[in-house]
Amino acid sequence: MEELLTALADPARWRLVTLLAERPRPVGVLAQLAGARQPQTTKHLQTLERAGVVASQRTGQRRVYALRPTALRDLAAALARLADDAEQAGKTFDRYGVSLHAERLAAAGAGWADGRSFRFQRSLTGDPERVWRHLTETSLLARWWTSDDLRFSELVFEARPGGRIVQEYRDADDTDGSDLVAGRAEGVVDDVLPAQRLAYRLSPLLPGGGIAFTAHVEFTLHPSGTGTDLGVHYRITDSTIDSADFVAGIEIGFGQSLDKLASTLTRSVE
Image (cartoon, rainbow, N blue to C red):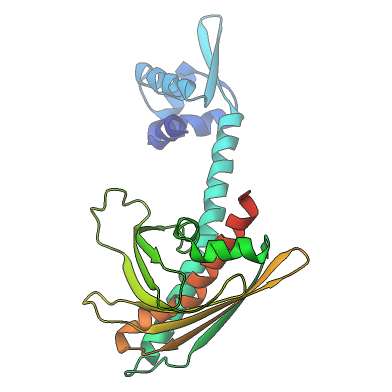
């Protein structure tokens, strides 16, 4: 694909492609129509042929070139897939932008978001004991507890009342830790009823180390005919003016993490 894109990127070669899309033509005629010298045109055609865009055959004293549509169709399909992916990502990006603008306007003083709550529901594959492990064991938490564009650089979850919680994450592509930490949150576990209920408090930290807000999160698990029904109640207290950017991403970000949990449980065979 890279060779194909490189071949098509040159304006002179693209002109030859458009001429050959009309009908097969010999080198001399292509050079005349393109307003170029024949040796230069031949080199361009050879580059296109190596990339699979054109084919040639000798007819008498002339070499005739024809366009091969398969390579172009493959490129068109790849671009269409990229466009589809970008469209979905763009919708999420735009949705976050709208939420971000609204929350920044609403953040007029300390406590501005206190009492704000979010509820999530997911039907998950696996019995409550299996789901519980994914909620409390760090090796399994790391698979879903952040978005695809982030990775954990530190993760602590002590599944007992009073147990510590630490989340520190970086960009997923920052494999050597050279970029700044993308975020950090610290908290404590409040209540543990294995395979039934989990409650904790977690506070995202501002760049200066202060808390942005405190999230009170409660998970409830109920067995169902196909696995486990998971309910989540997410409630905010201690909100600061600087927490607007964090609050704006809760519904989208936490929802995406739960979708990732559902996908992880469906794929895994534990």
